[in-house]
Amino acid sequence: MPDLSLIAFASAVLLLAGTVKGFIGLGMPTVALTLLTFQLDTRSAVSLVVVPMLLSNVWQFSRGPDRLGCVKQHWRYAAILTLFVAATVWFSQSAPDVFLRATLGVFVLAFCFLSWRNMVPPIPTHRVRLFEGLSAVIAGLIGGLTAAWAPPLVMYLTGLRLDRDAFVQALGFLISAGSVSIFVMFVAVGHSSAPDLAVSTFLLIPALIGFSAGERLRHRTNPEQFRTLFLAAFSVLGANLVLGALLG
Image 1 (spheres, rainbow, N blue to C red):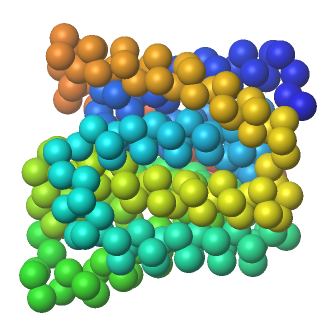
Image 2 (image 1 turned 180 degrees about the vertical axis):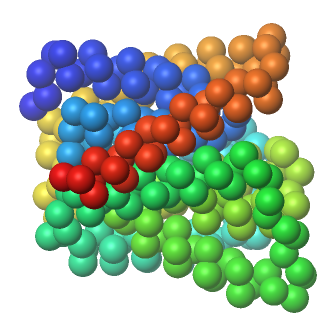
């Protein structure tokens, strides 16, 4: 069972991560996992994040404009993502934490770079199924290792050129699907204990408080300025994860 100081640290992290998600629409797992791994191994960090990640994204999906249309459009991606997350969790049980930290760092950097550059081209209509499958497989592999599936997922949805509401709803749906798979598999293989999940459930409270605060802040401040500062800070943190793993 995590001690009170760790719960307090994790609560502060989820408050910040929820604020970022409310402000720019994504980034909660990236923020939370990057910061939690300063005190925890990667799998323990994922265990603490999984319930807030799942339920906040179910909420995000449910608030969207067209739930049925979203599911019809993205069910294939969700199915592939779920299967590959489950398979990756199962087959990576013995993967060392240094490898998981390096993987997390690389994909935090990829997330920051792609978000900063806005460089994703539109996906041609006749290639949508191909890119859907490729993106879902990559997101499932990364998600099963670190839950840092944002780069391939965001690249795919950006390539579809969805409007903002549809984009945010699709993110909620797909991350919910992947989070269910992580939740089930982490319990099945023993990465998550009942006390871990109890703390994770508690951490939903600061995550939702932060989410609400972030939504209010979005209407009062400059989102682009915040986004630039956020991406700069997490580029440094991602590089630190990679260097820490490489240098031991």
